[in-house]
Image (cartoon, rainbow, N blue to C red):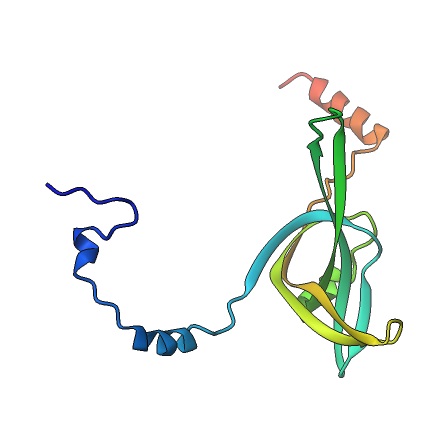
Length: 161
């Protein structure tokens, strides 16, 4: 029995024929837009902002995500905050407009870039943003007030009939 190295074609690949003239046609068909999906969990850095452009209303959010690691030399934890611009259209925009600074949320959407002419730098700039498809509010329910808690404790101590 003949053994094959990792770079050598095996028996199943040995009969495969490759026609280089077909590569161009194959690649042209595959050059379609493939969205880059992202899933982020973080906190809002400010209240949602409702904006209008081209007779279309949308909401923007500034979402902060945080990561940390332990520095091997110092033994200290180093944290890094990344800011993400989120853009929401349609009915979801109405819900997003109610979100306020500090809200803990999860967003899912498509990573997109666009270019614009900056008046500050007088040059063309590229901006990356998340076009949001879904939002999940992760804030915990508020704790019951002390009076409500006492009422619940008293009712649970009553003897069963």
